[in-house]
Each structure stands twice: as structure tokens, then as C-alpha cells.
Length: 283
Length: 304
Image 1 (cartoon, rainbow over the protein chains, first blue to last red):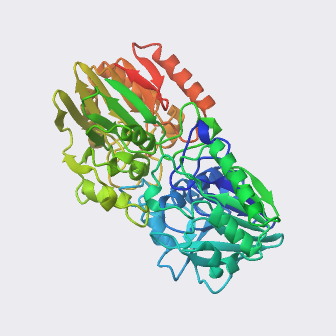
Image 2 (cartoon, rainbow over the protein chains, first blue to last red; image 1 turned 180 degrees about the vertical axis):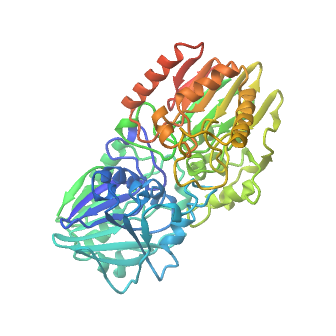
């Protein structure tokens, strides 16, 4: 199982010299299994970058299969889909997963971005590939190739969002890119969901009030992520979803601070990293 | 008159080491006329975020005019992150071509719909006004500041803007296909039309009218910022996408007497090195003309 970070930002893409090391694309994490199963977690602009790399595979010839989970409808999680070239190639099969209890139909989310006023594609029906929208439930699991996928809904300020768990040979990965806890240490429902993960990829804006998202002195926050990762006993924590104002240097400090905090809290075995665009971790 | 480039890219923002020099933000150009004059902004791609930060440092009352060429995402996606919308010292007027069934205020509202973005219209403290104009209309946005418009050839119709102020003039013309093979308006065209086939005379005539109007708009302008997303080969493969190559832009300059062409709306996949080659080729092409050519670069400006 190979995890690649294609986009690591929240909110809005940030091109420029200040973001070249950690990356400026909005969020997308790629999972690839040795049997060829591919799954994208969210469709920020990072997905379009992955899409271009995939043109050399069966997906470039219209003979490929691809899976996508959209965790919620905010722009930074969907804006890359219309530039995901494999979706435009006839013959490709693309499954977009959503969860049926959240009123979040993945089809509605994507389709409402593609109306003629906003997109030259005018509708998803003009994409050449075959796109289907299987609904999952929060109680069950779904086989996706050699992976077992399960979803859970998470609290998230103005809308609902999902966290995703992937079990495969090699290990278990949990992705929780946008979570706003009322009180992280006592959030047993989610801590139980994270428990046993080899890798937890977690939001680093959990404690943020949305009114601050335009603030130029904004800083990402690691406290909740470290707390839930420590309590759930996960082996590795990757922070993700960086604010547009966080420069590469700011992020270096964030990592140091997060590691110090974890040690202070007694989570001595927790290995913390920052998601970095283009980096692949193999389990 | 000073033109400041905050976002120069088409289609989608492209962060990364390969776009640091030309810039990876989507379309946004500011026209500065003077410290006490209104602030003119063309398109609201992701480049508008940093412009907003620069403006929000000011505490005097700001009269901001945002001219939208069309509402494809790369021209509006930065809007929710435009700081002055949240400032009570700002008054912001949005402009666009009148589109039946799609009021400009509704379009702006749907960009910040809750499902897409956590802050809502209720959080905006600026005074907001919407102006919708008819095709080819001209109007004034302040004393001695005249804005004229002309239709472009792009799916769901974009329009070009010209600003005239104190004997200086600029035209902002993106996104557009050349006016040669296909009319782009409301229908989705799934297959590339064959550019080697003759064009229906009626369509040809309509395209010529469109082009004639654009050339009149550009007449003797000091600077023309123009869609040059394609190479000639790319245009021939995708004439229905609504974008041009430098050769098309140069022809417009020559016919309208424009002295300086600024290449704009760079293709997302082009690296800085590839952009250098594209620009060198365009400069070579322009060397046979009287037109100066340069490419828009994020953070750069042109003083007229």
C-alpha cells in the first residue's frame, strides 16, 4: 500500500516560492495497492496533478479504473475534479464514494460545480468516462479492490464531513482531513475509529474558528491531532490541510512544536510528520 | 495607469517549483489609476486573494470595481478569499455582461454557497452593488474613467474590457478563441471541429462581426492583455475550447494598432522553462511587426 500526498493545503491553492517545499495544491491523497487498486481521498487541485501522472497508465488509454472519496463539499476538496484528465477519457471507470446518511450525495456535490455558468464541461455527463456513485453506510465496510473501505461522519463547523479508513495488506490508514472537535480528548467515537491505524492523516486546522480563515496571521494547530492520535495509539501521524498563510518555514516550526507537544503529553511512540506534496510512504 | 498582475494562469491554479517565476494563480489583473481614484480589478481568480490582502492594509474608504469576463471557475474562484468584502470601509461594484436567467448577484451568491465555503454573504461588510451591461456597451466608472466592452468567442460568452483614462488605454481580452472556425456560445461541443474544412458563410459572417467589434475596441490601445493559452498546433486540435495562440493575438494587435501585447492566461501545464520558449517564439514572430510582446508574470506590473 503506497500513500502519496498530491495536495496538502486547505481553503485555497497557494502557488509561489513560499510553498514549493510542502506544496500549494489543495487536498488530495493518493492510495495505490500492489494489485493496481487506486483511490483518491478528496479532489482538490492535487488530483489534477495526479491525473496528469496517470496518463502513462491504463487510465491514459481508457482502460483504467479509479476510485475517489469526497469527504465534503467545500471547494478545496472538489475543485480539482474537472481537471482530472482520466475522467475525460472514454472507457475509464470512475467510482465516487459518498455516505448515504450525510445528505452529501457525491454526485450532487460534483455536478453543482459543473453547471454551464461555472464550467465549460457544462455537466458531468459530458465527461467521457463512466462515473458511478456508490453509497456507503457508516456501519459497514466496502471492498475496493484489495482494500476494505469504511467511512464515518465527523463534526465539521458549517457542514458535515467524512473520515475514511482503509485496510489492506500492509496496514491500516485513516484519513480525517477536516474535523472540528467539541472536545478532542473525549471524542471516543472518533478515537475508536482511528484506533489501530498504522497511519493517521489528520487535519491541522481543527481548532480554528472559520471567521479566522482569512486572517493573515493565521497559524495551523496540532493540539487536537496529537491528542486524538496519541489516545488512539496510532503509530504515525501526518498533519495535513495547511492554511494558505503557512509558509514552508512556518510549517517547519509547526512540525517541531507538534513533536515537542507529543513528548510532553507522554506520547513517546507517536511518530509525527507533515504531509508533503510528492512524498510517497509505502506500508 | 499601472497594470498589476496578481494571477496570470488559465483553467486551474498550479502551485509548485515549476511555476514560481511566471506564477501559478488564476486570472486577476489590477488597474491602478492613482491614490484617490477607484481601484479596477479584472477577474477574480485565485490571484485576487493577495490583492485583497494588499488592499486591506488601507484604512481609507476604498471604491473597488470588479469586472468579471465570465464565471468559469478560474475567473471567480478567488472571490470568497477577497478580504475587502469583509471590510466596512470598502464599497465594491461587480460588473458582468447581462446573461438571461443568471443574474450576477445570484452567480456571486452561489460561489459562496454554504456547501462550498464556510463564510456567507452575511459576513460581508462592504457595500455591494451589481451592474449588468448589454453587449458592446460603454459606461463610466468615475470621473474621466471610461470602460467599454466587446464580446469574445468563448463557451457561455466572455467579454473584453477597455479602460481609457487620461489619454492612456488598456484592453483585457480573455478568454477567447480566434474568430475563424467556430462560434462558441451556449452549446457544449464535444468534438473538435475540423479546422481544414470550409466554414459556413453565415457563421463566418457572424465571426467577422465579432472580430470587427473587438478590433474597434482595441483601436490604438497602449496595451492589450490577450488570451494566449495555446500554441498554433494546440488551437488546431482544440478550436472549440475557446482559447487563442500568440499568432492570433498578434494579428489583432496589428489590425487595431496596438503597440504592446501581453500574453496572458497561461496554460496550467506549462512550466517556467516552457513559458520562456513560448515567449521567445512569440517575440520572434512579433519581430516582423511593430508590436512589442511580453508575457504576464505574477507580481510584475506595467506602467503606462
